[in-house]
Length: 437
Image 1 (tube, helix red, strand yellow):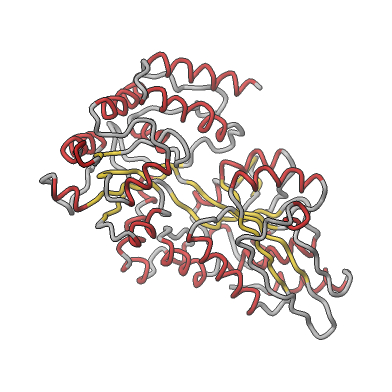
Image 2 (cartoon, helix red, strand yellow; image 1 turned 135 degrees about the vertical axis):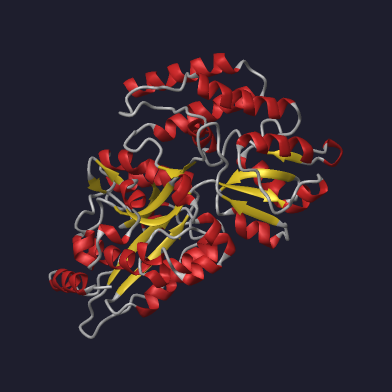
């Protein structure tokens, strides 16, 4: 990868900056007790004493955060530009709460990781700065990334974040429970209709075994994919009005309700609840993210994973992209340092390591035909995202509110036994009201 541009940019910026530039972590300033998950390294100093340290906030609180910390530490040890990354890992809710105030007081980190559903809001609120100059600065091009991954992080045709990882929901199944139910453990359901049939066979209330799970909070928004696979949607093409109240979406809700009523799916389970059922070997079929893989392996669950099943029209899964963003608090030299780390992350070597160690599908075009990726059964299966993934509601600022405050409660009410049509109409009206604000 060409990185001459950023080296020159850093050299010029550092020449104009104070020597030995270091800063105290904004997280330490905001909350002295928040040192859990911090990755730090002493600032490296060049012969003339010049250095730059930047702060990096993210919400990778799981086992993937351990891998992220290793990669950051390796960058700190090996980069030759006198750059040090100080990383603070915190729950996503804490990051969302602290970041706006930190931006206002100019104590925000230079670098953050957020998801594509945050792009429009953070762009409009001035939290992030455009990064259209990234490619030329570091010697990369937009074509080095899958188009879906970069498009998901744009707002009003400007690039506000650079991809860090891509994922969707995938279909997991417990092979032992399949076999016990007389099903072929190597053949997952190809359709949602088959998933319902299999779930009923797997369910064994005497052993607290459920055939399938539909979380009502704290989980990937699998229902957006289910709506789409059955020919429905949530927003119109322009993102200006709700199209939720439709016959196609009603069928999806009735499908979920029927499986809960039959006892094949637990009532009112959260994402953590259904994750734990899967990790305990008590759930047969589940649509979840790649982060389940490590736990399933550690718990010796005999599992399979594949792409999402087809609905009445097609197989669909929402593509979610986490991206690196530079905040408006960053100085020019901090921005240049952040760019250098982002470029390092997006080398084939580092991106490949992240994919193979955590199970995330690759998004760099250089890895599309990589032999090690293809030989890894799990990562290869997750790479099927290219066949069924779609970007949900790009550019709609209220998409997170709609999912969390309207659609998850919709699923909860339907699972609890409420009339699906009434709930669908009420939710659709609530979306329209939110879009008017």
